[in-house]
Image (cartoon, rainbow, N blue to C red; front, side, top):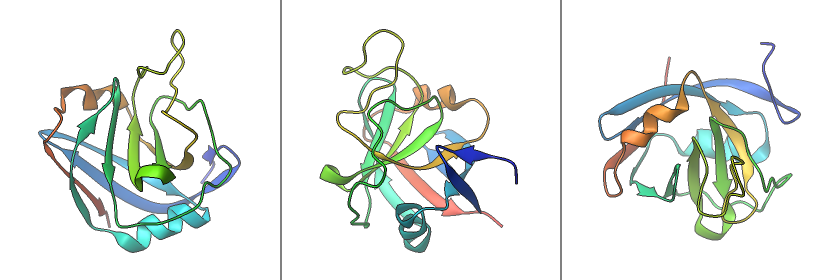
Length: 134
């Protein structure tokens, strides 16, 4: 596949994320948490926003795996304290400068393809669906 996520292969498990009127596709990482998320699909939730991050609780419980305190634009993360799926598309209130910093370390579980900033149009409380594609 050629893509790499912080040392993890892409599963090739393609997903579609619909948040309010915004939609993007991505792929999940080939790590234990990414596989748990894939098994839980489809997931429906209510979006919460925190700066340029959307997060929502999912029915997955996992320990922190290769935790990252700073992430990249378009990364998908799992935040263990809130059992939350996170979509990162810019700085958060915890960021210093232009970095993208979660509230605390996350497990990288995938990436959004294309321009992740499209999620800026999503408001807190809007419906979010994460589903398998293909």
